Length: 178
Image 1 (spheres, rainbow, N blue to C red):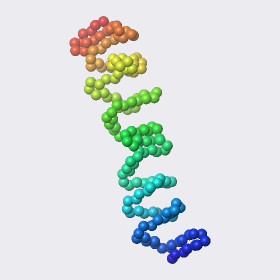
Image 2 (image 1 turned 90 degrees about the vertical axis):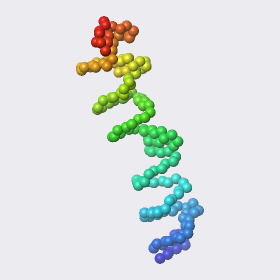
Image 3 (image 1 turned 135 degrees about the vertical axis):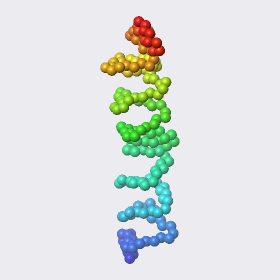
Image 4 (image 1 turned 60 degrees about the vertical axis):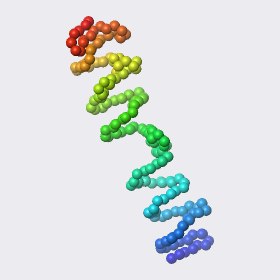
């Protein structure tokens, strides 16, 4: 059934519409509304912004070749570099491999809540002065423990300025100098 309302400009079709050629809907800039599910079986090209007001489900890969920005920049992936910015807490439930440098900013620093912090062979903690032997600047306070301290090298105790050696135990021999 085909109904044409010439006064309101509305055309109604109460059955399937099959178009075997090109169909132009809203060609003069008018809006086109689909009241049910729109199914498209071929590739689709949109020449303007796609606005979606409900949840969006994608069952394939998202190829966003212009970067990604969510919630006004709360999560972004830069277009050309892939640099990623997270505006809130980043929670990772699996293992993480970081191949580049890691910078920790802010006042909270680095906190290990379970397990331990392991440094690779030949690696060490370096204090603000750049001296790996500067415990005060590495830990921000004097080293205190209620357990055993194991040193795999010489143990040296210096005065508060760090210039005078007051006590030393040589690792290989156990010889002690006071």
